[in-house]
Every structure is written in C-alpha cells, then in structure tokens.
Length: 238
Image 1 (cartoon, rainbow, N blue to C red):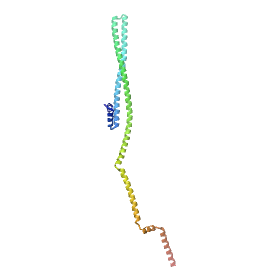
Image 2 (cartoon, one colour; image 1 turned 90 degrees about the vertical axis):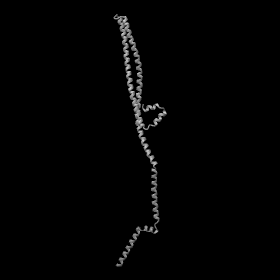
Image 3 (cartoon, rainbow, N blue to C red; image 1 turned 30 degrees about the horizontal axis):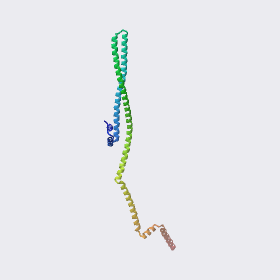
Image 4 (cartoon, rainbow, N blue to C red; image 1 turned 180 degrees about the vertical axis):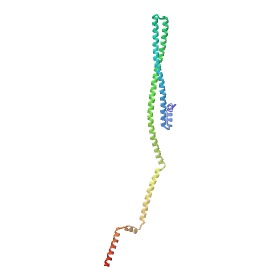
C-alpha cells in the first residue's frame, strides 16, 4: 500500500503528524504521482477486462436471441410436417416440445446475459470515470510539482540568505566594523590635537621670521639698496 493510501486510512490528527515529519515535499509529491500512475495502470487493466466481459455478454445476447428464434422456427416446421402428413402427430409434438424447451432455455440464458451486460456497462462507466479522474489528478499534480520545485528553490535561497545574515549578526561583524570606524575617527582627532600642540610651541620671533622670510618686498628692497650703492661708487670714480 502506498504512503498516500496509508495516510487516508489514518485519523486526521495522525495523518497530519505523519505529514509534518516528511522532510522532502518534492520527493513525496513525486512518489504520490507515481502511486497515482500505478493506480491508473491498474484501473486501465480492470477497465479492459470489464469491457471484454461486456462485449462477451453482448455477443451472448445476440447468440441466445438467434438461438431462441431458431428453436421456435423448428417447432413450427415440425408441426407443419405433421400437418402435411410427413411425420406423425405424436413425433411432431414430441420434437416440437423439445424445441420449445430449448427455446425456453435460450431465453433464460438471454435474460441472464442482459443482466450481466447491464452490470458490466455500469462498471465500465464507473471505471472510465475513475480513469478520467486519475488522469486529471496526475496532470494537475505534475503541473503542481513544477510550481513546488520553483517554490522550494526560492525558499531554499531565501533561507540561506537569511541564515548568512543571521550568522553575520551573531558573530558581531557589524559591531566590529563600527568599532573600526570609531578607531579611525579617534586617530583623526589625535592627529589634529598634535598639530595644534606643535603650533602653540613656537615663539613669537619664530612666527615673525616665518612670516617675513618669504616676503617678496624684502627681496626688492635689498636689490634697490645694492643698485644705489653701485651708482654712488661709479660717481666717485669719475
């Protein structure tokens, strides 16, 4: 007996408990489809057998109908022969009675064959209905299986992603990154502090010299003084 058939024999609570323990819905659905295909195969075999019986009963009806008519004709012919003097009345009555007895037997077989044919016809209709339903269910669940496979892939990918995110949170990686950011900010603040301290350590003379050493105006004044001294020296020589 297939798993699905066994489930149907259990109570609702028991069946639900069994289903809850099933780990692979794809494999179980595939198994269910295989079970239905086996049921379909058995139903087709039974349908063929019952149809064969129905056909035989129809043939029996035709044969017994013809046989009953034939015996009736023979009884008539026997009585006609007696009327024509070809056989005695006693012989005609005896044989005609036998022929009518055979006719009665054929009529009995005919009635039985009709009842069997009606029963077989009903069974054929039921089996054809079962076959049609099984084919529809198989087709429906094969389409459903495609959808289930796609859903399982999406669910699996989502589960793995959520698991990765969960593991990242649990390992404090985000917290570590936040600490690294704070550490960089501390280093930047410390660098600014040292720069400020170094600036405050200079004397006022250092600051003045530092400002004036690169003043372009001082260089021009020095050049002008040198030029005046040179002119004065030339006048003395003249």
